[in-house]
Structures are given as C-alpha cells and as structure tokens.
Length: 175
Image (cartoon, rainbow, N blue to C red):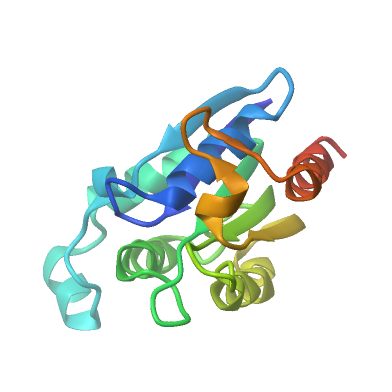
C-alpha cells in the first residue's frame, strides 16, 4: 500500500511531523512517503493572484503526490485554534484545481501540541470538513502534551494507551 504522510505545519522542528512519521511507519508493508510542506510553498492565495498566475505547479505536484497514494496520514498543528497558514494556503490552492483534494482516499487524521489540548480544535475542523473534499476519514487521534507522551529520542509514542489508539487508527487504513 502506498501511503503519503505529512504534517500540516511548515516548522522545521515540527512535533506533528515526528508524530506523523511514526504513525506512518506503523502501516505494515507500506511504501511510505513523508512530505514536507516547505517543498510546496506558494504565494498567498487570492482570486486576484490566481487570475495573475493561474494554477501553480507546486499545488499540482502536491495533488499528484496525494493521487499516488492509497491512503493518507496527516497530523495537524494548531495555530490559534485553527489550521496553520502554510497548510491552509496550500489546501486553498489545491481545492481550486481539484475540489476533491483528497481524491476519495482513506485518511487517518492526527494532531498534537505541547499542551494538554492536543490540537483538538483543528482536528475537529479537519475531520468535519475532510469528507466534503473527497476524504474517507477512517480515524482521528489527538495526542496531548506531546513531550510527556512521545519519546523524542526513540521517535515513538511512549504512552501505551495513546500508542494503542494510534495503532488502532492506522490499522483502519487496511479495512
């Protein structure tokens, strides 16, 4: 199974990238590709900018990556209760090219933050809207207090209960 995974963050030290890389590695026998949003940097979306430049190649390339997968795993960072600007901008460009951005793929949606909220607000927004954009959301999991529940040195979830939730979510991609 070809799996695309990415953090909805442009941070070079993204805890969501650490989480999604670990979660993606749990898909047994998968051909896993972890994307970096920084490779798809685009000008700020507006209709005026779209009229000026058309459909950016980077947005088309991102959509092609999603199309190449059978399943997608995303971990959302939360900025002020919502999506990061980098993710939202890329998503907006992509949705103008193809409304079903997720192309009827199976998705597992994750989120984490350093605090106890675990980025649950953005996870709820993402899971609520994803089906309108061609996603079959198989599972969602929020990991609160990242540094207390993730072993950064060994790059794995250290909290057994949370790890079991992520493993169960990932196993849903095979169904």
